[in-house]
Amino acid sequence: MIILDVPQLSEEWFAARTGIPSASHFDKIVTSTGAPSKQSEKYLYQLAAERLTGIKEQGYTSDAMKRGMELEAEARDLFEMTHDVTVKQVGLCYQDEGKLFSCSPDGLMEDSGIEIKCPLSHTHVGYLFNGGLPTEYIQQVQGSMLVTGFSSWFFMSYFPGLPTLIINVKRDAIFCAKLQAALALFCKELDAVTEKIRELN
Image (cartoon, rainbow, N blue to C red; front, side, top):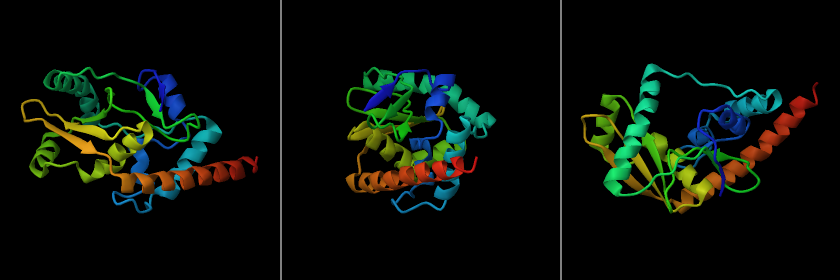
C-alpha cells in the first residue's frame, strides 16, 4: 500500500484522484455481487475526460452531505474513545506503485480502516434496523480492503442522539478477486480510450 499524506478535499487530494478509479465509485465498475456494472461506460468516459483536461469532475454536494462531513470528526472521536484506538487520517491510498486506483479512507489503524457515514435520521434508523453492512457500501468497503491489503474494515453510521452502528466487516476474498479483475480490465480500457481521444487532437 502507498499512502499519499495530504488533507482530504485539498487541491492536492483532488489532483491525485483525477482520472483514476476510487473506491467510493467502485460501484460504477461492479455491482455488489461482483458483476459488471451498467454504469461502467459512463464512468470510463468521465475519467478519460479528467485525464485529458486535468480537471476533476465534481459531484453534487447536498446540505445533508455537508452536514455529514461536519459530523465525521465527531463520529471518529467517538469511535476512538469506545474502541480505545488511535485513528490516523490520511489523504489517499494506492494498492501499489502503479497507482492505477485508490481509496480515501475515513481513517486507518494498525491493521484495519474505517468508513464513516453520517446520514439523515431515517437512513440511519434503517441501517440500525437491518444491522449489517448496507448493500450500497459493499464495493467501497471491500474495495478499500483490496487497495490497502487489510483483512477487516469498520463501517460506522452515526447520528447524534441515536444508537451508533459499528460493524467490523471481514474481507471477502471471492468478491475482491472479482473486483481486482474488473479493475484491471477497466484501467486497461481507460488507457485505450484516453489515447484514442488524444489522437483526435
